[in-house]
Image 1 (cartoon, helix red, strand yellow):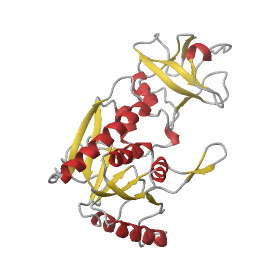
Image 2: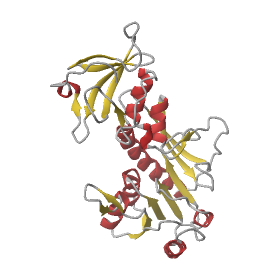
Image 3: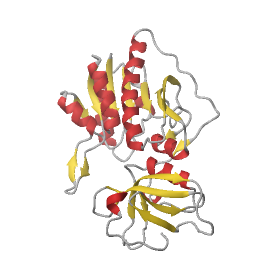
Image 4: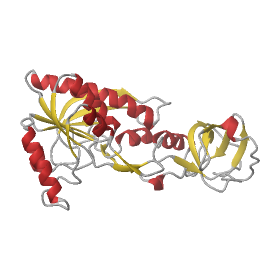
Length: 317
């Protein structure tokens, strides 16, 4: 099948490579403009652009697809490229730009989206992280027929994935990227063989996965220890979770922790109970937060057994 692909991060790259490996004709790839990256802030192509370049595929990087928007010339160039590609289908995965109606209607079979949740739960920008943060037991991939709404289109294919107690956003992302790549190949195969029928999303169970914000990084010890552990896992690697520890000027990043039941009587949230090579125990509103892996500003991730060496804390966080 002749497919135009639109995506940007590594999650999308795996889907693009899977479609190429399956033998589909991909004449055009849309991806976000190169962004500054690293200490030198060097302009760096997206993972999707790197994969497309290696395969010799034509690449288009408009800042907008709105013909009446801020960058109409770039949108018009993208429109010409899309018309020239004559796609039967457009596959979209974490592209980062809204698709106006003219794009949705251009391919013969419309646009399929690879969404990392079990729709209608967690529509929006950060479904992987919000599922972990909320304590969901499962998530998955939904292949969706795109419409003008925010992740509101009909469901074509669903793959369910359990969320384990050890999953971080990083590990779950990698698993879902693999499942999404397999699912989109399956969906396109079914389309070739005679088509898929979209199933409308149920009206009940709709939730929205708000975009991640760095302001969410500080851990609030007035929450329960279990909830804080979920936030730490959800925000690994971005935006990360931070906590101020006594005797250390800058907030410390917390990469791994467990929740322990109970706490000494009369201890208020934020009290540093103990710091040992086995863990740094912090009182919370409900239970004890035991820190297991930390990182000082400008330093590297360290197990708590290394982190506590030479540190003599006291008091509260």
